Image 1 (spheres, rainbow, N blue to C red):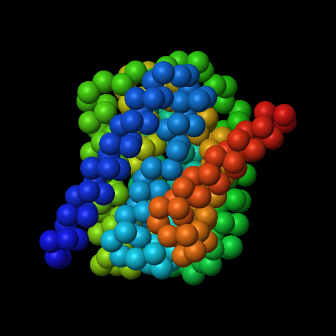
Image 2: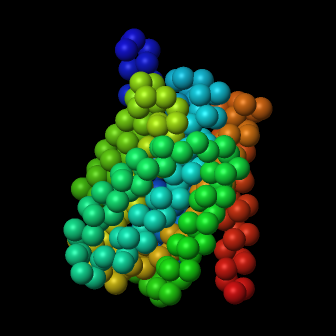
Image 3: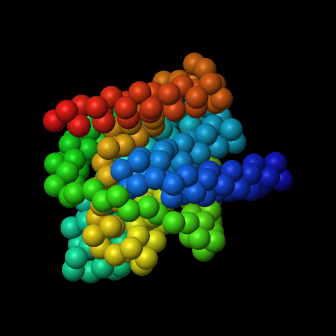
Length: 257
């Protein structure tokens, strides 16, 4: 690995970690409904694709975004498994859910997706996730950040983004794209929620993330179309705008129903 690559890798670690810390700091000012949406803002996925594009090229990132779009669906299944096992296994449910994620990631790596089939695949899992998690009542409890919590999110998200960039370089964009959907933020958030707030609160946090699912997948799919046309900066801005539009629209539809 050359020196320029290592410098860019280090920058990816710092910037993505700082963003994750900032999201947690903002979310402590609001309740679980809005806080969960803030915590669901594309961070691991967005920065993974952004730095893959910056380090290895736009076309490389566009190819990675196809598998990211598909593998986001298994991150939603990760949340379902976590909630389903939480009462019985408590903190261990988080580690079981992570193991399930890795197994599912290995399975989908055997399939070939295009951007349309990957979006449809995740859409099906979004519907299943929504039907399962909508039964859980939200709570108006605030998340309070501490130095250890901020440090956990900083190192976890920063490390995951850096690892994704490394995997993409040596294993190809498809495998890197899968790991770009790794639920790093969810893992850190659920870990904190279980230890400091209890099972009921943890379920509320997990359930409220469902409101951002469709917009999350829309962001990854948007990268596929926007990066080759508008480049990294404007492509990222455009993808975030699409994320916001889909987020607001889906929330209005869900609330009416």
